[in-house]
Length: 395
Ligand code: ATP
Ligand code: MG
Image (cartoon, rainbow, N blue to C red; front, side, top):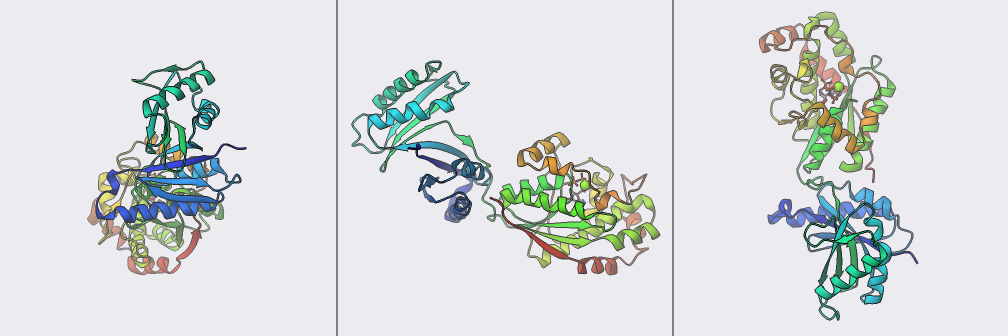
């Protein structure tokens, strides 16, 4: 028979304090139930700041569920534990068979035992000593170290059974998605904006996305790439609605009528203006971009000032603002987006790019350039082109 395993998912005490606690817990439990449904027949329940993920039969995909649980924001650690009957014979057998896989490459361990069922004949000290001996015989290369062990093996005697585990895995951290408002992410096909979306989702923000395309200057494949990035984000953030707006006419008008040095800045002002409008229309309370200070000409402090001044009454979050490219890439790889982000398709920001972009633009000069066009009419027309693709939650 296959060894029965369960997952104990711990959520951070700190973020869950106060009146919102039950709300957070309900959100987390619901999320875990949705995910579990994709991997088999599980029982999901909670007790003592822990969500228990327990398979009801042998057909459950435990590795699949483990990976999925590790993407749930709000879970700080996941412990995989074997479950058995509450007698020494079973506990010893399971410890000998189940624990060694977690000891490979480790030098030392200790056993911590806990007995919430006081009718169990051995006390915690004796139980720990006994199981320590069992593990040493099963895995003789390892040593006991009670002060700084590489691995802590836990044996817990609870109401319905005995649980045996070795170490715990880091969860995704953060706060459950949906507990901290809804924001509109300006999603390009690059590296930075998917990371920005991931970081805001980690803080509990429900994400909608806005992508600007410029067909035929940007291709069908560039759009597919953006939808693929949204789908990677959806592994963590749940369903992502991707709103798509065409900037083709705006870009052609800019190219025809305005000073080339201002192209990118003007385009970004259109983007932010349209984004705020889409956000309000779709019930989002903030914008999110992937900008990082000084990374390119349009991301200097002055350039950001010029683009920000278009946004009238909502915050613009830029979670990558203080990160180096290398740090952004690390998160991008961790979330699994990097390989997609580096596919070489054009973005609307890369068509009609100025050779000498203004790095220290002055707002009045930018506005003078902008006034060569009917800004409001062009923004209205672009807004009318909006259509939405819903990218399903991916568990
Ligand atoms: P990214 O890697 O996210 O594309 P970037 O370093 O290439 O960022 P820019 O291209 O200047 O920087 O874009 C800055 C931000 O503007 C992006 O992070 C994104 O939030 C937004 N943005 C850029 N292009 C688009 C687009 N086509 N659709 C939606 N948002 C965009
Ligand atoms: Mg880009």
